[in-house]
Structure formats: structure tokens, C-alpha cells
Length: 346
Image (cartoon, rainbow, N blue to C red; front, side, top):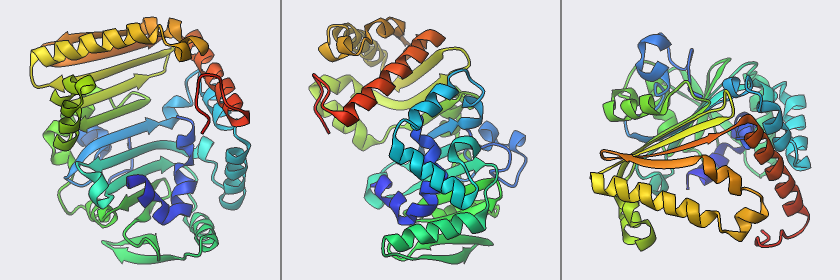
């Protein structure tokens, strides 16, 4: 549901979110306060109090890693995607792959019901006039129109067909988008009014555990409905006790990922760690895994329980990550041409 809401401002969000095709925190300018004085560096500053899930990608940090050139090449491997990037750059002067610095996306507990979500994009060279003109042109091609309205000193842009999803430029380095009523709330927070996610101590602590200095991080207070669904599935029953999740991925040297799951009891944490270990063993026997040559990569995955927390760590070398990206690129190329043996064709 949240994804469908993004189409409400399709042209504008397509321009500004295209950099995600290859894969952050929102720092220094996402708020009008001093970033260093705000919880987790201001990463949550724009989001409403009901925020429960946050995902961030720091593209500026990713571009300093040895793997960025390979990730960028993977993004450009689809001619249609490359053509779209080229057109956006020509029309707006904004290259998503080079000029997006970070992207942070947030959701409430039940995003599916009202489609509520928020997005904060930080970049350089954001030309509001050219980007809005491009978005208006894209909307017209869909039989729609872009219009603006004011809120808390901001100029918000939305489409006639989906007026509840809107975006605004906080400055020439920050674009803010919200759906399901969040755009107005985010504009209010930007003016210094309202109560935001920074007041949610549990979420702030989770983001700290995920690590805002990582290239990719995520934090989630797991919704009760999700826990109930997991508990009802015998194969995923141990997941029914997950209360909080935090993920951090560092790519400075190779890849180091840490997933932390807080459960209700120590027994549940131990059961989850054991289940992950068994799943890794089974994966080593999978024909699909063997076909892709991914078996050796499973050796870098470890799971353990620490009190009520189940921790999964993935450690890969530079060579393994580079090889994995090349395998994925070849697999995607083959999948576009013909069915891959052992895999259903889309």
C-alpha cells in the first residue's frame, strides 16, 4: 500500500528516489536545529511521533567504498533504467546516482491501512523549478496534473489524483515526501511545532543500536499484527516473539552486517538462533544456491543468542562481495533474456 502511494507524486519521487535502484542517515540540514544536539544526529527529526519503522541508506558513504563502482554498474545494467537516469539528468540537471547523498524512509505501525509513510532525501544540486517542471510533465503523461498548496510556511506539491501524498523542498539539499497525511505533519515538524519520532525513546535507542554511521541501517518496533501472523505460522513461530529489530550494514571493507532481534524470552531467542543455523545448513543443500555458486558465502553467517536477543552476523570479504555482485549482475542479465534453470520466469 505504501508503495502505491508513492505513485501519487510519481514524477517528483521518481526523480529523487531513483538512487535506491542500486541498493544514510539524514544529517546536517534535515532539521532547523543543530544536528549534533539532536538524538541520533537528527535522523528522525522530520518524522511524526507514530513512526515505528525506519530504513536509511547513506549513498555519500557508499560512494567512498571500493564496491560503489560495481553497485553503480549493476544499476546501469538495465538499459531502460539507464535511459531514465539519462533523461532525468538532462531535464533537471540532477543525476540520482551521483547527487543523492542519503535517503531515510519511515512508516507507522499499520502503514497498509492508510498508506502513511515519510521519506527524507538529502542531496546536492536540487533545483526545485526544474524538478517540479519534470514532475509536472510526467504527471501530464499519466493524465494527471501537479498542484501546490501551503502548509506551515512550506510549498507542498501533489497530484490531483492523489492529493494526500505530497512533497516539498526544505532547502536546496533536502526533499521531504509524505503520504497518508504525513506530508502535512512533516511540514509542521519542520517549522518547529508538533511532536516527532525523536521523542520516542525506544525507537531512538534502536536506531543507536543499528548505527547511523553505517552505510545502511534500519530499526523497527515490530507491530503486534505482524507478530501474530508469525506466531500463527509453524515454520516461523519463533518470530512471533520478536518485539524489536535493528540492522546495520557496513561496507568499508567487505561487508559486515548485524541483525539484532529482541524477543520476549531467552528461550525464544535461543530457538530463533537455532532455527537460523538450521536454515543455513539447509541452504547449503539447495539446488538454487548451488547453481548460483553461493554456498561458500553461507560460511560467513553466524547466529547466537544473548539473553533475550538473537543476533545474526554476516561477514564477507571484499573479494566475496565483488564476486557476489558480478554473479547477481550475470543472473539478472540472463533472467531478462530467458528463464533461468531452476527459477520461475517473471
